[in-house]
Image (cartoon, rainbow, N blue to C red; front, side):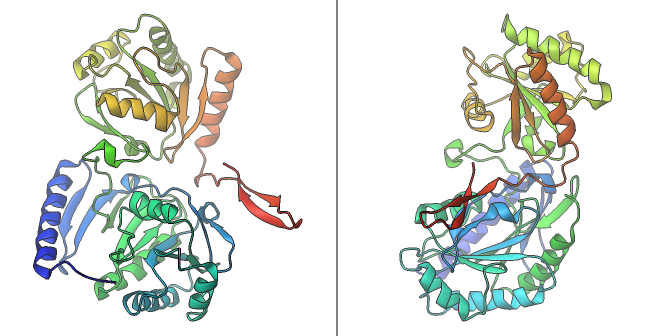
Length: 410
């Protein structure tokens, strides 16, 4: 591994990064950024604002498919390396070996991912892992297509996975799939902190809804500077009718209903809004949060949405039914990527979408069909009691030899 950038430049980058973190941290509601006595920049952030880590599949040192779907309900740790790295990577893995021993009484999975998959075949990783006495059910060394590895590093953890300058962070994901914290393996303070945080995370019995966590993942919960940097919309920031900001992760822990509309729509939008008003009356306190997103953001300013909501008897302070507007390009992407539905003014979905406590869409329903309405209300009731995100189905398939192998069912 080469460190070609001069020290003075690294210091300049560090100072600039800290300034950006402090600036964006102060702008981001709910996140407090500070520097502790060891000079480490930390954030206190609502647990709901921590990023989700998507499920991924790679291949372990035994040549078996490793699917993180099976880790739902179990914390795991991710790091990056390559096998023929002569010094730094081996020192990193010696540190992970020590950490593994320090938390041996916890049910935590360690995942060490190569950044040179063209060289680090399962056979190479197996020999390497044997040097640390690593077994895949506790410490898996993973390889696979490089583009998949880049997706894990760059898109999920926002770290560099290039062989020459790959990250020196160790990342911790909690039982509910949240990117909980990151640690510098060469810093003694961070290694002590890892042991305590890992034990605390492993001991959690219920999702920490409503709690504030301290993390080195200081960019948690911040809106992206450029939508082009976001490969897939999973979370979004919009504007409420009172002008305040809305962050979809603020609803983590709640089951909610989402719909698309625009204020000047003369037909289905009006009828749907009247249905939702009636549903709130019918369900009373059992009615979930409702989120209505305008598909005509150019015209539907917060003031327009405020007037629209007042026509349906909603006070400005009533947050149980939110009317949202914002970046038109973002709203189109929310429709196509988050809801999997059209979200243009001229053509938008008229379905109601049910989002679970983890922020994932679990179903879409035609509210005008009595059978679908019944199914929607049953789903909402069932989702209220979930303690863990659902595990994707992993079914057994037979290969050509007749042996069973695991294959993921999307």
